[in-house]
Image (cartoon, rainbow, N blue to C red; front, side):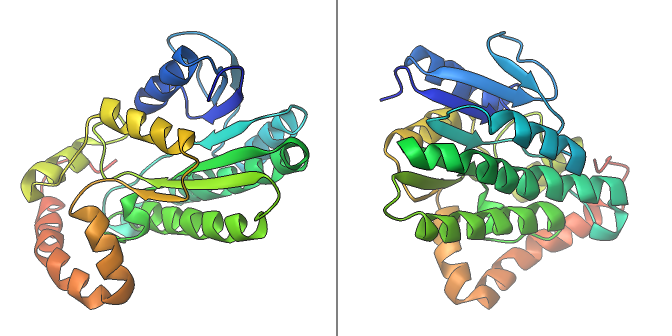
Length: 254
């Protein structure tokens, strides 16, 4: 399915991204990584910073000039901690990388993609459907990405361009700060190995799936939260209290 397909992968130099890139390359895809730093494994790479408006526009101009069969919007950053302690600079960057960049890059590639067909893949998070305390900007940005994916899919129906939204639960990658790891241990949060998630993301792309949520019971909580959010409030309240105690310790937040 991927042989000779032209794939743009944002965030492809990271731990999860490098695994996805390696699998796609192994299956014959022509992968171009868009990131701030080149991937350790080498390969095709374009350097752009998606944390600023200027950086996003420069990246959008670059990718709009090429034909892409598949665009995978994976790049992401995270803040864990009380919302009021997040710096304004990191807050802005969070929305730029996690939401504005995938929206703008998708807009930039669509005219050419609609002429030949293709697939937009937005990698969100379970946190975009179950909005967690102390992940306020990350959760809300991923919620926006989920809404964007659903709306765009409806708009592009019949055009030959498919939209896939993939929502993993917590993944054991370098994106997690020491505080996140301490919280995961304290609350017994389920965390998946990146190798598993990389395989499942590639499977979702291959199957041209619509909305894919990874992990149980988190995928069940997504459905419950959509109908009975107060039940999820109650279920998460104990962990929220544990997090509050965590932030009175000396564990770094970012």
